[in-house]
Image (cartoon, rainbow, N blue to C red; front, top):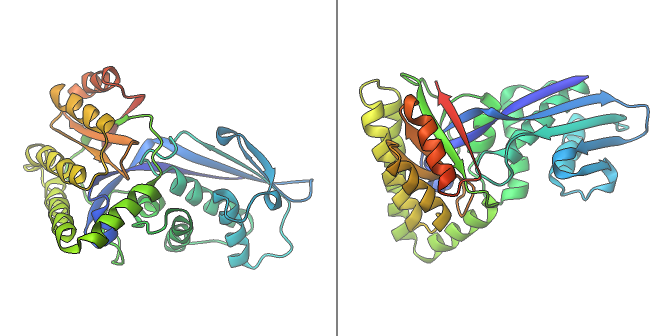
Length: 310
């Protein structure tokens, strides 16, 4: 048996603007994860079980563009393995789908690592990351690449599209409460809508992207400085959320949760990820995490996750 597990991820700053070359900050969320088991099989074919999405099928019965099938087909093509081996693959995940926690990228990375190891086609982190990004492009159009990067390396990341990856040294641990609206929000749609806005008035939206990028740069300084962290990071979250509202990627549900977190004592709060649903995040003092999480549930969050970043 070969086993692989990957964390979820959350974007702290820079979503959407990162697609246009501005920096973004993201961190792994180890409280949720995708897990893949690969076993040799006595039955012919590659059998896939993914109980979370009620899938039990042989590889060749799935459409070639199916998210799981595309990973396996492309990996077999890359490794030049022939004939296809007989395998049983089981995929489970505690990461909510289409919520900004990187569920698709986490499954892709875990599946890539488990299958490539099992068929004796070892891949470095760099190769896994590049492969996962190609898979992300199949399903998200013009993704930034941040999901697959944070999940592959499982470290806080300062990310600029097309530039070398920089992992962050966080000066001191801090606590984030994640609130899930429960609304499925495919990233591809919001990314596409932002692109339409940008194409209609590039000068206007380039300015907004610049502002978001500058916030991400200031946030990096805060994360790397003990003295700046609590005073600065929350304010930057609030500013970033306002700009994402301008980009039309927030929603009434997200805005309600953001307001509830701030009212409950969060140092700052914003939506996170593609938007239009999915998750928001709140920066809190560790002793306030439970009370902020309770306030989010009362305001309509379907569930919450408390995570410490270090």
